[in-house]
Image 1 (tube, rainbow, N blue to C red):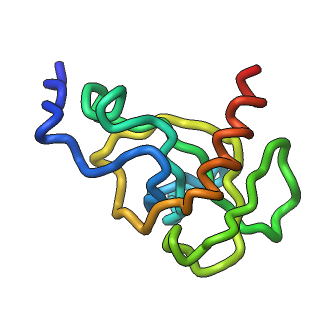
Image 2 (cartoon, rainbow, N blue to C red):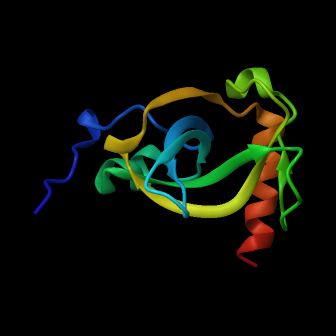
Length: 121
């Protein structure tokens, strides 16, 4: 059984951090590095679980998905192209996170929070 991570030992991932993670391809045995947004809080979930709840981040050029949230400040998020937070949610072990890229700006955080409220209403 995996030992829970103590809060003092928890990785520095918190709500609204943008991280880079390996996304698997469904049609072949490989993965690609992609950004994701951490939705769960460090002290309320992440530290105890050793994992974070995340949402996909994808190119703004892709076909729309319900509740997509355009990221207005891509520089703060550590992104290089126009992107959206996509409400395709998943939980990932912190050991699989490759790196932190940035964090959402306050205005983008508000947009995501509003979309999550709609998603779960």
